[in-house]
Amino acid sequence: MEEMLKEIFGIWYLIGAAFVFFMQAGFAMVETGFTRAKNAGNIIMKNLMDFCIGTVVFMFLGFGLLLGEDALGGFIGIPTLGIITDYANFDWSNFVFNLVFCATTATIVSGAMAERTKFLSYCVYSAVISLVVYPIEAHWIWGGGWLAARGFHDFAGSCAIHMVGGTSALIGAALVGPRIGKYNADGTPNAIPGHNIVIGALGCFILWFGWYGFNGAAATSGPQLASIFATTTIAPAVATVACMIFTWIKYGKPDVSMCLNASLAGLVAITAGCDVTDALGAFIIGIVAGLLVVFGVWFCDYVIRVDDPVGAVAVHCCNGIWGTIAVGLFATPAAPGNEIAGLFYGGGFTQLGLQLMGVIMVLAWTVITMFIVFKVIDKTLGLRVTDQEQIDGLDVHEHGIDAYASFRYSK
Image (cartoon, rainbow, N blue to C red):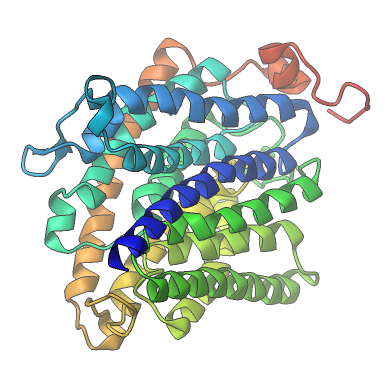
């Protein structure tokens, strides 16, 4: 019976990886719908290529850095070419599963820098994220590295994936500069509506569906899987309700695009602790996530004036940080297979301190490495397209196509 359960969960592990791969379609739809029609082909191409390029570089170096034998005190894994030299014994399940997670980290950046970034430059920094930036910090957390050894907990990637992707997005969007027309001379922002909220909503539902694999694939028992599915449903649902009520009160009408992002924010926030929180913990995490995403969008637009067309910073960076810290508050030993306890469940400040340390160290790694990456690209290839290319649309200039050739649309 035990052997049969092992086989069942091994199959579910790979099915979960397929769920996560399908999330690429969700990211593509959200980003396309939230931006303008003249850039739709460029966005689809970016979301395709970050996975394909990521596969190539992860295959030869990234996988080894993530899951290779510890080196430098748990800082990195030792790279290996076992995928080529030891085909019969290679760990294919772990390769495929970690590859699709790696691709998610890279694709988060795309939305924040949409509509004004050179395609070649995108390919380069996407490759660097999958090659070095993500695998090294993920080794600290999941590869038996130094953070894991100290008890830091991030079950499915609020920190390792979403915070890293969202922080990279913030740095990239700040360095590439805002889209033409985003800000007035006095610094006040203008809304630049996306061209298809329906496509954006479809993307949101695809992502939510895929998240059951994202969070649940690593479950090791039926009760744990059921618990993860429950928390992965409660947090985004509550976040969306909280956002709807808040925007309805503040703006007089419930904000559709903000509520879609709130669903994603709730999913991001519960990802680190989906296996260690109960329903009440997930409920509170969701409320904070639904309000935090609104604050994050406002903060980017009005305070630091970083143009983020899809709200990637608010969804992934802000809520990746919140979700990681929330483990130290809401982890409960009552969760199936869990022994850690957060501050509100009798565990004191120990786990909270570990979570804060992990957030600070991974943030520092991401900020330093990605600032260098973006600066080098900007000084060599250039990050930003010309004003005329931006006005005409990247589809025409970067790819020689019109994604909606049979329709007329406003530029």
